Length: 486
Ligand code: BG6
Image (cartoon, rainbow, N blue to C red):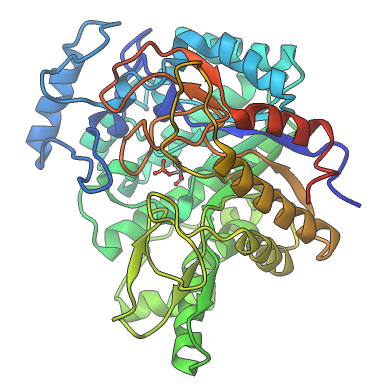
């Protein structure tokens, strides 16, 4: 009973939220580099609104001397430019992960470190060797890298020149990038993930599209599905012993009442994520989505072989993020609360985090059951955690007992899903195992880590790392394979 012996305990991060060094060693710009810092009440901004403005902005950023740090544009702070300086600190950071006993480290490759514009034929050797060193460092400590190929960061050039994923050509550029990294790292990386949270991808920021109507969005998504299926095939050909998964944001939804209207509303809500899983795990567009396309007059341009590629490029496992549950109802007067990429109804039975996200450990077991019962493939929780405003004490301690409580309850729910429901669970990589830039707000003070990084919302600080109380606690969870968790 309990978790498998080779259960992949670890932690997760993404390039644009940790690396910094946004213009070093020839790295090209990404859409994420255009995002300013925000906070709970102020959304992050992209500081131009037209294509012309976008190109000018790109020129402005490109003019910043390589390696410049700090407030490189007066009065504007772009968190991805410095991240948590992982680019310079990765050896020490991975050493800390190894101290916790990590078996796996989920991270992403920044596409523009390898192909600065996204469409070159020859990769950047500097970019490739950076990730060689990162993987070597992991392997030195027996940590399996789990690598996401694209975590929200579309090359800016492709957004400017091709309207991002709305262009079918981007599939070939992405496939070339995938082939390059699969060949280069085939002896180092056995676990891959195609697109992060594919079910929340939308807009210029994440996929480079300038119009956000359904037709453009779903056509772009069709290209992303094809690119993902192609990546699965390439991975299997080039690294036969590898496993490659997809990744969705999964927030189980409960019908708010037993009113049948709420129940059907809930079915429709759940289909918003199931659609992505149906395509990527089962390999076809489900009937309910085709009907929705008809209703919305969305007509997907397909080429011969597209449907075959989707059906032959299904994933080996489902990777997903779990932070919260939500509810469905037709009663629009029910109060709402923010959530991970969604505005959720406030569940009166559950508490919310400092950022308003619903805390629901049992929801994780529900998520695991729903997906395993429906798809019958191994599941991998590649993100979960509590964003909280931690306090670094003068003696260097961070007493994040609330985070321990949160994680304990979620791990207990995972264990029940394995022991009581028979779910095949591969691993658990809590989000932001080291503090990083929050995606939604760009804040640093929304911290998830076991390791505190001394930097504030404006990028000021020593960038020194401190172990939080949860560090040793998680180390013990891993060492005991969570046997004693109650
Ligand atoms: C997921 C993303 O949506 O949630 C991460 O994959 C993100 O990139 C995480 O950081 C937590 O969200 P936030 O907004 O608290 O950083």
